[in-house]
Length: 554
Image (cartoon, rainbow, N blue to C red; front, side, top):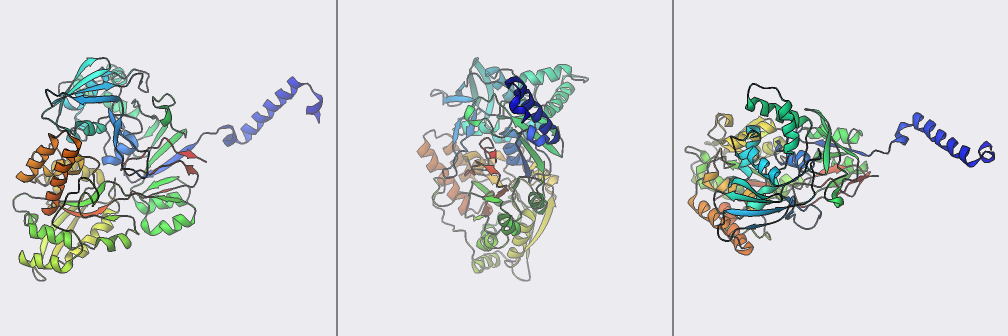
């Protein structure tokens, strides 16, 4: 009753004192900080210096969060396909007189996390960091995960502060899509670190500057680095000054934790150690749902394949063998059994209804008698099996459940006279080997590799695998496919700037690749993730990527 008798000023002081006492006894009440903890499938934190490793999981977690590119993906819908939209560039156009030159207009008023301005100089600097070997900021460690994703980009030139000209080696209508993979790091922040770095020469100082940058990164993205412990955790906080106010994150902090093993991720979720996991263990999904967690999934443009070696002496050079492998796999059985419904059977890179599907004559399905007949025609049978070796990983970005899935294929193909040997290595090593190719010693004698691939754009879905000039070290034609028809159709699509005509050329290319049984097509990922019921506002798009900005914690 004492509060009622004292004056208003003393009443206010008492209320403040009471609040302070409560805060000391209950610090969680004093701070309303919201934190989302995520268990990734990666075995390590993807690189943070601007161009991530760990495949597209790296782009998802340390690329699109802390950085932006000139173009980006619309990840706002669960129903519509993700399409390319303006990012740090607001508009672009190819030169009608010279199809190798593009002009990009840049977004005004954007700042890096260190406060320095984003402009044309920054774009040229970031292009040079992966393409210009005599540039002081050139970083060979970033080249492999970047240049192979935009192989025709040759140079960048400043026109004025907010306009750049990009030049390609050949006419390439895919360039704006490829640029979604070139993230803009802060030149000013890097230069400050370079000036302070120790080293015997500029190259050594540059390497030291990049190492320091990775620990204290600066991009323009909606999230900023706040704490980084290599191989253990990365903490990101929201960038309240982000240029797109609609995408300023709604939670205060996001914590990323490497958890490569599915059962360990699932246990961490169920025990409350994390709020969100990628790729939960399929056999635990009933319990996860029963415990009140939400399972998200959506068919996405992401393919789980075997990619064949086509060098001299490869067992996969016989098209009968390639077709037999595709006909010997019961994909529906894989889906309904091992994966608990969390996949879509693949009959190519694109399924019927997609504008790039085309009309392949080879129909991929489960037909074991037809597969056995093809193998017998190729000279194999119950008493003479064909030995093949597949390199895969135990976990990793988009790999789903690689070891159990490959063991399933091993057993299935045995019924069609294949003797499959598995070479299981760490995910990031497998991804690095993917760029080195089947001829490299890192292949360890394998004549197939199991690296999943995104199929959001023409280059990623088709060109980098099928065009002969994309063989290592240029890009991901791991098996050295050399098919003149593929090369002709790639050139046709690349040099077609009318969207409808380009779609028709891509459909023709895809149909040709299916008819050639270019891959063993197994599954399309549905990107399952299990999330706490406290998390609201998440949209699972039809994309390998996601936008963490809209999510909130209840």
